Length: 291
Length: 158
Image 1 (cartoon, rainbow over the protein chains, first blue to last red):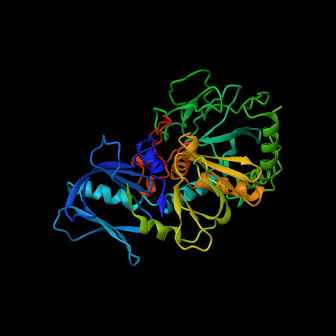
Image 2: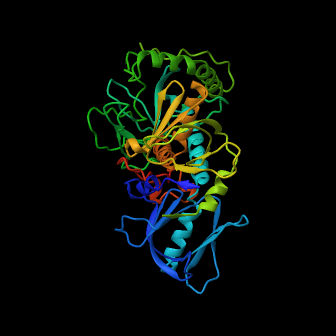
């Protein structure tokens, strides 16, 4: 079977990320003595040549279907790449010291394609799970039994929302939010930090409050501001009814968001109100009119 | 250049969802279209003469550009060299697109980029590094290269 050598060579020499490189002693394929080789691991390919600066490769080992094992050897710090099917070979290596040996074994064990594929699938699923709770409503205050909500998005584990046309983020220890999920589970997350930025799409710089979150409920945390920051301390009176908030989401996006969350939020408000009044029938609250 | 041929041939025998007969033309001038059984296994494209057990050859699917050539054909090109452009003729446009997508996604480098993307995004949303639980967050091959900083978060209050 042929292999296009130029393609393989090019992959080794190009500037794609190197997973590990260094000198290893490799047991010869013709002569059985161990020879010092410069080895380069990229993905599931282990290249080897005499010196780092050499342009020509001596060879490449495709690391699929093999296991990495410690082995019995006259050489110290030895390990081998073993293909278990009959007729398939074993490559023997020796590292220069124990640290190198451990490090190479670890890298080679996880070099195969499948390992990375599984890891990516896992990350993809996690990501999909996280973006389900990307947008929520946070209750930011109440006045005369009317609850005030803000649409918020998650960032760095905090909840961020804007109270004017610039994006601002508020740290309130007891802001609770009602998370809309398919299972309608009720969760409570503290919003812990204040971030300033100018738009939701750029990545704002996160400044963690200097004050520990335990005391953040008493006064607003001292922060470094960039631009127009609006901090909402917990002890402030409820928002004046007249306040309008500019939402940085597009009008259509926000209406859809509002609609989607509306039903669940109404139920949750009712439940919350019921609990507060000790079981008295809750009135259905109107969702805040963002104007 | 030496390579572990037997082990690679063994790899080519692994079952694969993407295996089909199609027309294949080599990169060199004068190469003609031939019917081949083309099989995608991990980041290699193996090609066989129909009914033969051992592949004629293997193409490493890294640092290559896959593009649609016309309705039912796609090409794999390396190093922007005309002498390194392989052409494949599929049975249908649908099949052609499926192959293009599969080959792109099979590249180790593509998967690595995806991993870094998800890692960054999950961290952006949650403040936590999802690779920490696997104990591999320090590995060079998964490092975020776009300058985004992983800022430590004080979780002592949670």
